Length: 123
Image 1: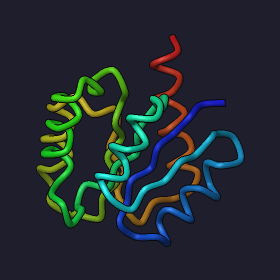
Image 2 (image 1 turned 120 degrees about the vertical axis):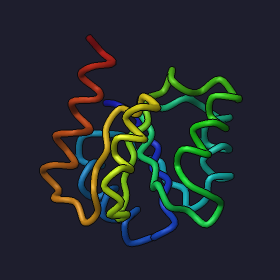
Image 3 (image 1 turned 135 degrees about the horizontal axis):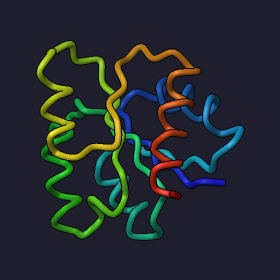
Image 4 (image 1 turned 60 degrees about the horizontal axis):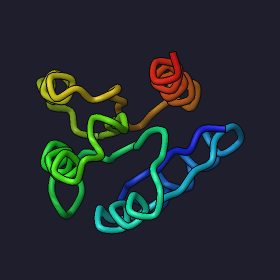
């Protein structure tokens, strides 16, 4: 069972992701980036699902913090966002994110994309 940390400021999204992925993966959630850093200090997940737009800043800024702390790219990050900026996906992929998922997401797409990232790291 893979361990997935999910960081999103929307508790409904956290609940949905937990329900969708929690059947086959261990899920830990945080509504803040500081909370995610606390989770990371306690133990490393297999992947991180990260909301791109958070009150504390955007996902690329946070990836820089993860780099400084030595978590990235060792732990793949999957960006989840409702932002419709067409260039955002390319920016994130250029930073080496594991995948990019648009909100609202289709549960099967979320499950499949997360599993593909997990399969890549396990191969």
